[in-house]
Image (tube, rainbow, N blue to C red; front, side, top):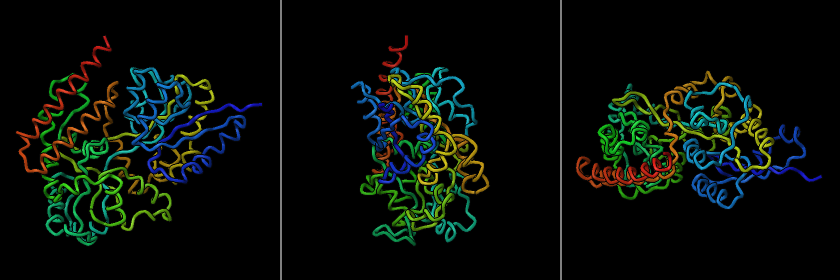
Length: 417
């Protein structure tokens, strides 16, 4: 008797040679309950995932179960690529309200939240202990003051872990740049979702973006960022932080801290003790970017019932206990990990940041909007690095970006009479 096949595509935070073995160990209970089902796993880097998913649907061979970035749901739903979640499949609580919103498009539930993340500051604890001395990192003012002091004493010529540069920042025109710097813009008052929803003529050039852009420009100067350091790839930036000690802070996902809290023996990736801090509060208060992944089933899957059984297994505590310990990916659902580790100060700070986070809008054209915003933000950062005036050059770049965004939004409206 031939086996039923389920093709599964995932994009874990950390892609490595152990990912397949980890997945197989995590789905042991599903295999025992469904011995006739053959699982075909494909692991894809995030940088290639969107293109591969689009290509698969165009060729008529999409996976049955796929990990979907939370901001991609609107586009995939608009294209009709996602199957509706069966009633009653899962009713557990989520770690934050916005997580469920990512999986529901126009009132229809099209996936189940799997893992979540938020942008925060990963800080070298040894640098904080040695130099903070009662300083306050919870506000823009306090954080800038501390970074300015670090920058003045940093060894710019060569890597010196005892005198690191303040913050690892890349200015590359990539989505990760937008992910990491978007929190500073919304803490400054920028309301991207609201502006997109209204179809405003000014989005990146809107006056609400200025406080965040001005702060980032000052941070780049204090950070002594130049053309070479501004083009560092995100992976290299991470290694410069964890392995070389080049920076005191890294903006990003706290997956390594999660792993170390669960399993202290896993702390081999970082040579320095690290801790999680929320993005400092700006004029608009405490806010950060939230995101994560949804597990969805293709509307073209021939085994949708089996596919949803696998999804239910993958969001369940037995799977996530194995997955989180090795990957550092945070479960979207309450219970399990959150119950066992909820008393850890690090996990508590991460959860508070998750609850305060704001996710990207579920716009059907988001994948294109994201690329345009990332490129525009990168261009503005480079102009600030060149000491050009934000009011003149920077906002001129933003206005050009808005013209392109307006064309994209007009196309979206034309498709939604």
